[in-house]
Image (cartoon, rainbow, N blue to C red; front, side, top):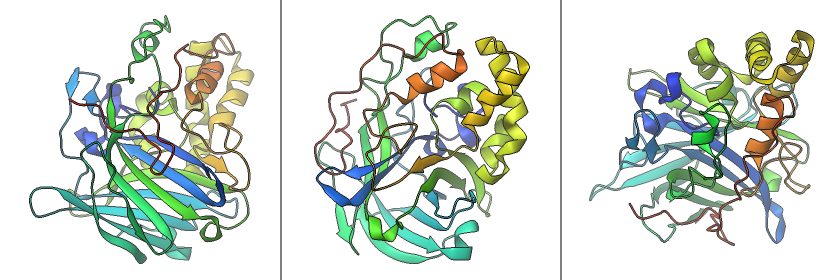
Length: 324
């Protein structure tokens, strides 16, 4: 998995597929060095345990979906792009995109400047794209861009060469952002989902780097999903313990390897080409291969399945959803 099924026992956070954050991508817009593409994927179309399909409802309306950005290197957000969904007439959904800056970016709630509102959520083959304020925005069902041999991974890493996600769908939130809105330095990005079902906002899931939450968090899964990247040092020992068993590391080496995975952020400089894990993450990057190399202490570096062939050459770049 990437960050799919990040709740306890490969389940969903708070028991809701709509709150399951799966992947984060950041890369320069092809053909336009002045803009970046930021994509946050949530809500897998299929559950793993038990096997089956999830809800056809795209996004939870009592939730917030946030992309957080640290611009000064302290792993505390300076910018937040926050999306809230609402039920539209006729049974569809619409999205409101806000930007939160400064001190408010460290908080929780529907704050900040509205960039777009009433943006339609896509459910079909054609992507409904909304433009406004110098941004382009998309939200809706898409083909899942993540490629991985999940069945082999859970069978003691005995890979089959079959891509579990090749026919799966995901809900994508994609933005085309002017780089002037992001600053010129090195950014640190992560995504999170917030559950408002209780009447207050509770962080349900978060992450940036693929695979480590479902494979390494174990008994501290709930604590990890509810924490902030600035506090991730507390999880190094737990990650190291898991790596000792998975990769045969000596204790000191396991600690060193665990420290490369935390804090759970994605580094990105808009002026550079995307290449995971050094700079952002493109839709074709074999991010799971990098994680496998750490997990197995270099014994495995790929699951042997290619990136997906249904990607688009224009915004939102993620491919159309598979028919179900």
